[in-house]
Amino acid sequence: MKKITIAIDGFSSCGKSTMAKDLAREIGYIYIDSGAMYRAVTLYSIENGIFTGNDIDTEKLKKQIKDIHISFQLNPETGRPDTYLNGANVEKKIRTMEVSSRVSPIAALDFVREAMVARQQAMGKAKGIVMDGRDIGTTVFPDAELKIFVTASPEIRAQRRYDELKAKGEEAGFDEILENVRQRDYIDQNREVSPLRKADDALLLDNSHMTISQQKEWLAEQFDKVCKS
Ligand SMILES: Nc1ncnc2c1ncn2[C@@H]1O[C@H](COP(=O)(O)OP(=O)(O)OP(=O)(O)O)[C@@H](O)[C@H]1O
Ligand SMILES: Nc1ccn([C@@H]2O[C@H](COP(=O)(O)O)[C@@H](O)[C@H]2O)c(=O)n1
Image 1 (cartoon, rainbow, N blue to C red):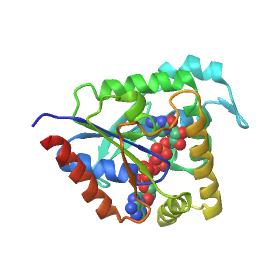
Image 2 (cartoon, rainbow, N blue to C red):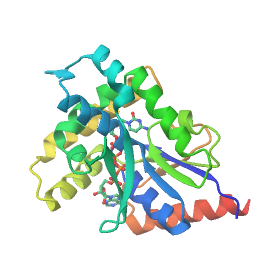
Image 3 (cartoon, rainbow, N blue to C red):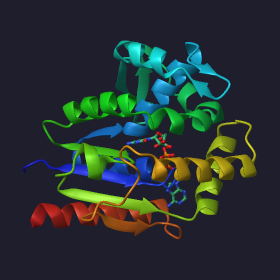
Image 4 (cartoon, rainbow, N blue to C red):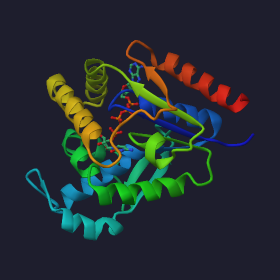
């Protein structure tokens, strides 16, 4: 069967990667979490003195962006790809609240987006890819055959993230997570370059009151429809 490109965008913590990775596994496609790439650049920036408080040394980051190598390798235990930054597995480190609270300003920088989008487009050149993020259907793969835009209320998204962090034994309060979700939504929607928007031809999914298996089933149906058309 001819392979297609699937773009899943939407607000933070709404379940994009949960849906995307399950579909990719079932249909034998590559799965790429584009947010992990922006998180890896943020971790690099934290670890290499690019932040002074909340200020970003953009000139320093611009010079070093070509030295930031990001790759993915399937983790057989979780069934999802782990993120590698310059050869080191940083999957845990990029999911901390510290990275979450600093990632959106880094992702708003034009030269960072340019570098990441070029890498994402190269990964999807042969199609057969499910990529999730904020600008996949609008900028990275505007010709994707299937585009989904996912949303859920901020409170529900924060609760999901809180439950996830708690299950991992990580300290974070519900209010702090809710504030982070709201802040990232705001920055992502209002930045100048590739702001978070639903592509005109994307299907909207509000999964506030859906279970993981219901949304998985819904996505599989959309994939079947596109493949049959
Ligand atoms: N329908 C659902 N009901 C309950 N929990 C869900 C649902 N969908 C996803 N989750 C849970 O919500 C959390 C966030 O999901 P996920 O990481 O897939 O979101 P995301 O949109 O990819 O987030 P981000 O963009 O911030 O990386 C996870 O713990 C996931 O298991
Ligand atoms: N295509 C994308 C993907 C992500 N971002 C930014 O990265 C942050 C972290 O992404 P998560 O998917 O892990 O939440 C996100 O808040 C965005 O600021 C992006 O700009 N474009």
